[in-house]
Image 1 (cartoon, rainbow, N blue to C red):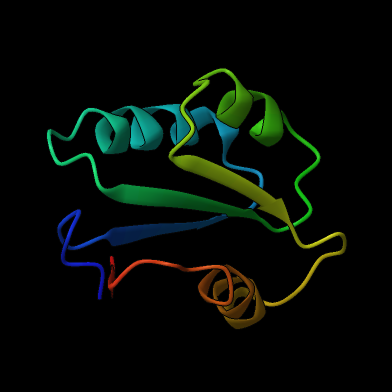
Image 2: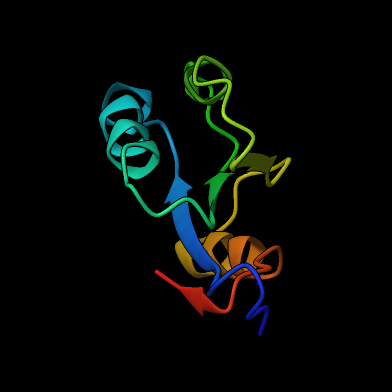
Length: 90
């Protein structure tokens, strides 16, 4: 655990074809007053504007990843969890 900078939280957001609601989700996450967090958006090969929504935030706490092919929901979660660097996952 990185005690010097405080506890780091990881927010995991698996998604597929939900760009319409993703912006509100990310707005809530980046609006938190706790700054030592990472936000991982795991895109399950969406064909909508998911990547564009993520990039529109220009926040270095947000990490975008794409599964590169459609996978099951549990595989998308596992993909996102494999990228977590925080002490706790939400």
